[in-house]
Image 1 (cartoon, helix red, strand yellow):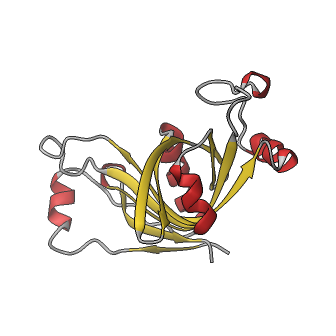
Image 2 (image 1 turned 135 degrees about the horizontal axis):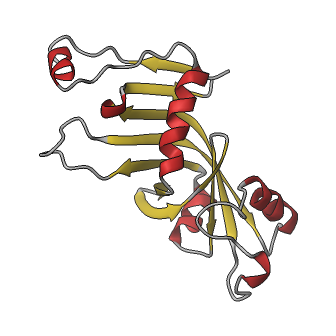
Amino acid sequence: MPKIMQQPVPEFVKPYFKAAGIKIKKFFTPASFEKDLKKFLARNHVLHLGTCKGRVPRVTPLEYRLNGLTFYILSEGGGKFANLKENKRVSFGIAEPYDSRGDFFGNKGMQAWGTAAVYSLRDEPAKFHAALKKMNAAKGYHKIEINNLLPQFNYRIIEIIPDKIKYGNPREGVFQVTWGRK
């Protein structure tokens, strides 16, 4: 059962929010928070995936699709897969651009931690196609035509199930909320 924890706004910050016309929302259920979070996620489509092999981290920007709060990424290769073979624990961030000089409260972003699974078209076609269906590949920015994928690449889908998500979007009333799967 998901849980949320919302940091209280520090007293010394409250007058600044008030002067900027910002009213901070209070989330009483995980579902109410998830609704706001999904609006943010629907406006975006690129995450920065952090993987690690040994003591060497790697961050890769990737386009994602959602099914609930499960993230799906279609990729043809790269060092992230060697990292994921060794370590399934991942972190990723999603942020929208803003000008801190023009709008100090304009920062919008989230960070998540979770576990990744990888499904290969060559090695696990049934799991790959099931994940492709879950990621609603026909919807979004461009249609993925599975028959048009170049056969030279070993296409894989990375499925990320977050355990924890931290999200902030002060301009829209979200102040330091942490969502946990358990």
